Amino acid sequence: MPMTANDLKNLALTEINHEIITDWNDQSNTDIPIVNTQYKLAVIIGLAKYPWSFATKSAVLTLDQEIDPETDPFQKFKYVTELPEDVIGYVAAYQTIGKKIYTNHQTLYLKYVGTVPESEYSAEYVDWFKTFFAARLNPYLNGDMQRQQVLETQEMVLFKAAKNIDSKLNKH
Image (cartoon, rainbow, N blue to C red; front, side, top):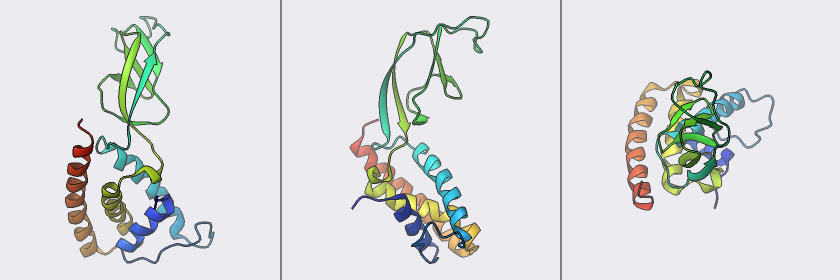
């Protein structure tokens, strides 16, 4: 069954022995804003930590905007364009500032890590992410430092396992 953001949030809450949240619109639940804020950050960090096969994308960018040499921050490029909206991390290295990419080539073949819906996350990634996210939530919602140590240890092991499985699916 495909995962949703709320499913992942509840898996992480379970990891820290916190009650699950059934009504994510409950204005009286003070934990919801904390969980939602931390989740948004954790998703970006989690996807950017490794070029996951389910989040690695390709794009062909045609650069037609020539740079005025006076405005080129690197003083050596001919073209500039915007990166795709869903870019989180790069697999191929180019000179970038913010969401702009600079090059001397008019056509770029870009390979990058981008945002994807939770329903596309691999099982191994979900297994790691719930622990990674739980370790982010624990200090805010639980504060149990022994649990924090366990989560951090588990997270490292699960990350390595998820990377190893993913690398067999996606030869980077």
